[in-house]
Length: 74
Image (cartoon, rainbow, N blue to C red; front, top):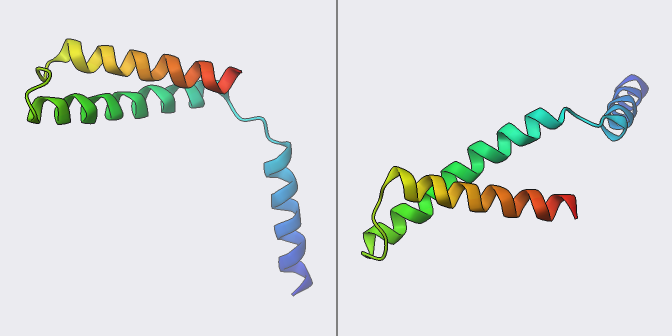
């Protein structure tokens, strides 16, 4: 039993000490922002507020990415 708690403690320390790779965070932000932008533009196109197009999805993704990036940095 003590071996399991030692492993958990070691894992917790490693996770707390890890800074992570910022490139992974940027890629995750791009992917998730694109999916959210796609969902928002798709919903707006269902209610005939905006056309579902690549430009609209890309614009929404860029806006969401930028806002997320600014919020995380501040």
